Amino acid sequence: RLLIVDFGSQVTQLIARRLRELNVYCEIHPFQQVTDAFLRDFAPLAVILSGGPASVVHANSPRPPDAVFELGVPVLGICYGQQVMMEMLGGKVEGGKISGGGGTAEFGRAFVVPKGSLPLLDGWFEAGNREQVWMSHGDHVSRIAPGFEVFGTSPNAPFAITGDLSRNFFAVQFHPEVHHTPKGAKLYENFVKLAGFTGDWTMAGYREQAIAAIRDQVGDKNVICALSGGVDSSVAAALLHEAIGDQLTCVFVDHGLLRLHEAEEVVGMFRDHMNLSVIHADESELFLGELEGVSDPETKRKIIGRLFIDVFQKYANQIDGAEFLAQGTLYPDVIESVSFSGGPSATIKSHHNVGGLPEKMGLKLVEPLRELFKDEVRALGRELGLPDHFIARHPFPGPGLAIRCPGEITREKLEILRQADAIYIDQIRRHGLYDAIWQAFVAILPVRTVGVMGDGRTYDFACALRAVTSVDGMTADYYPFSHEFLGETATRIINEVQGINRVTYDITSKPPGTIEWE
Ligand code: XMP
Image 1 (tube, rainbow, N blue to C red):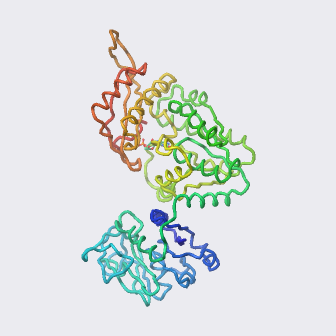
Image 2: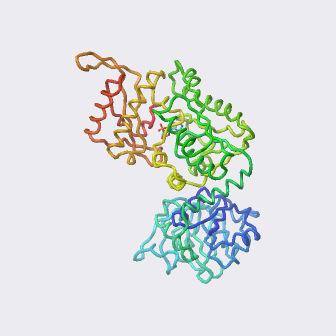
């Protein structure tokens, strides 16, 4: 296994992700944990020293133990890791100046040119060209350590790539793990090959490791989990169940704003099929009652968010001795909450989540998906035997159909919306388009229009179909359905759903629109 010593870079997890993609087993440990004894126990086949916000020139800045360099295994230092390596092995690091040539602070895109040849860079430079890398450093190495040679330079980093071939020590100034270093993955691939990894580790291995970690954290205590039926909470629940069995109880909060047959499907799947203990908290009367007459989008969201917490708490209190709350937090959520907390970004929509709940209830958090990205969560879900239907699902917002029913919510409108949405999704599946679309749904409009059906006049609701492509939900474009598809779908909805006599297609991108209508 490979050890990543974490010095606190925001992108350390990306290193782990790159290694998982190479089917290499690695663990990230904060530098404070990495002692001589730890290293002896861990016995890594290779070590990576991550980047981090500290400055090597300050006394008391973090260091790995000297023993890292005495293990006789390949070591790769990245950014801060490079500087710490140089400093400890006899080179020199200086604080950054923002201007001037020859080793200054550098942020963003840079180009390195090769010098000599290094096994680490196999497949990098073709015919002496330069290669894009991503830099983010204030300090710089001003003298490399004895035994090291320079293998690549950039205008502001004369020691962009260095290596000591006799010891297989490598140090790079840039971040090979990020997207903006296009050949970065190749560098990791070369590094793990040098260390003797064969790339035979898989998601099955991750599953074993995650289960052991959950058992270790939770012991014999009880855990509660808010199950929504979405990918993240479903995979988290399935994994926890495998780890701790009956110590897990899930609460499925049914706010009456779910899609057609959704509650039965989720509860049926987890309770009856997978044998999880699931409480179906049917509180639709409560939610719909409080939402009556409310049409302001933010007020709706606030009401739903508040009731969700109250309801969850009420049911959770009935579970004896729960000490942990499980959440399906993913790694991108972790990065966002670190980098944007307290930032100046405006609240476009107040998102509904159970944040703040653990403190309020005096619960500790267990977040078994914290290290994973969405596609890895899906892979883990498959590994755990969850049906594809659950794993490949489009996202569904916490406030549910409430935000797809602009204006006042009524039971009548919700029922019409459910029917129309089910037909639309059925059409998308029948045409094999489901996986090409990030999210698709129907919104029922707060307007009735006149139509004619048979020989009669109709005066029914209009609805809008929405389908977008997106990578992360932050930006989106409308999906270019064929006219045939749109025509066929509109006809089906109008014929099969009583209460809708007009169908429109929403062709707004995000921005300026948002994906949901509220
Ligand atoms: P918008 O409408 O902001 O949506 O473009 C972006 C993505 O977020 C989902 N969404 C939510 N998810 N709670 C959630 O869990 C919410 O309150 C919420 N609001 C929007 C939306 O479905 C889309 O995938």
